[in-house]
Image (cartoon, rainbow, N blue to C red):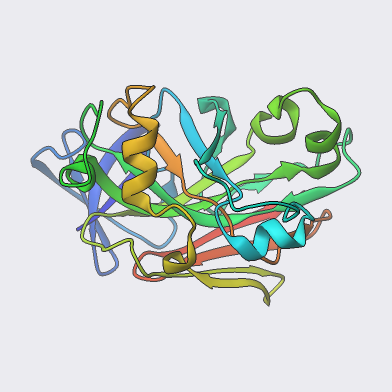
Length: 250
């Protein structure tokens, strides 16, 4: 099933997508209300209402190498950082290029949204706590990432996490193609099977320390090919089995 979050008559509403038709529901996972609207022209919202966005850095070996961080052994544990709800941006929306960075980068990746409270997950039950999967764009001020004590400005500024276009609930995350295009040119093209820490391991690791609440988002890391963005660029993140997240840079 595809779950959508949409603005309808001035209100944020949940629904399901079948073909080109959105069927609105009374709540996330609720019963249909009988209202429908066409997907074309619909004002989609990020398909999550998180208390936090948990992100994994350096989860693909080729990405570690391209940033010059392969001087030692592979990471023994996932490298975790946080974004806040303020970072979410809607699919198809525009993000202003900040004037306080000289090196504004794209990082396309698989994202997942938690469906029920998750603490101390095991490999056997981890995926049962996932509501669905979507596309994520981890926007990054690369120069600030290198100079600041933590990655707060570099990763967690307003609208630095476009998400969408919807949630796909029936998906196996272990081997999906992840692509990022800028102005139609492919910049990233990899598979989730090449992650150093797969989705299940990420979930079991994170929930040892932090309780994930329904609606929380987990970004699973970006593959090789990251690069700069300038005003006028259009970024497309496509994850196999989900769809395409489009973001315009202003």
